[in-house]
Length: 330
Image (cartoon, rainbow, N blue to C red):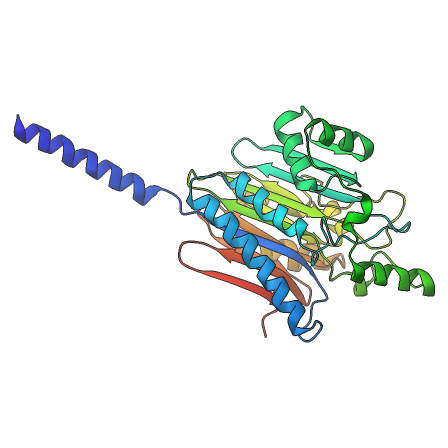
């Protein structure tokens, strides 16, 4: 009898050990936009502040993953922190449209069941990523825009602010200078360094999630909406392949369906994440003259951070390493 008990205990220990070995390791990747970000283009103080905000978002999200929270919750937490930072084109710090107002877009996707939520052209909800999360969880729809999105967010109890909350001095000065001289172009390289934010994550259950948030293009008009709230263009997640968040000139990302393009290459061409990401950015996007980048993660926790610009605010963390980066490799 004693031998049988010891055998059962040993078997249970062995099973638990195998489960621990097969359990995915949590990982998070974030970005703060890609564009004309060159060495020496910002003050040392500003670079330190940007790195600190990226690190804080990274650490917060990773701690949630380690504690057993879902990848979706980690993505949400990271993006909220980046939206609240004045250093990125999302939430507070977002660029201004031709009328001097802010119009914000965001989206999320859950790789476990392919559920998604997105909002566009919002002007009062403090954290658009929370509105996108609410659409995914509490709405039969995927994308809500404008006043309808604001009304839905209000019904969900999300914080509202005056549109001026999103304005920071540096962005306002650039807007005023462009209006004063008449030199304003939504796709101008001078404005392209103020990019979208996003995150992709893998949790302990092996689930992937992705999210993206942006203020769009400086001086945009006619209610222009880019790729960030478009599932398959700026955001995509599927446990069978990968999670992707994009940043850059949205019209090109929409035309090419860049986020899902990475996933489709992995699914149908059966190639790895790194190769798929490189092809989407350096071959497909570049061939059309588009600029930008993406972060991505596959179901094994492998990461990709590809861009065809001078730099991309980006950071990653897993059980073995972490890094915060800004510029292209020397």
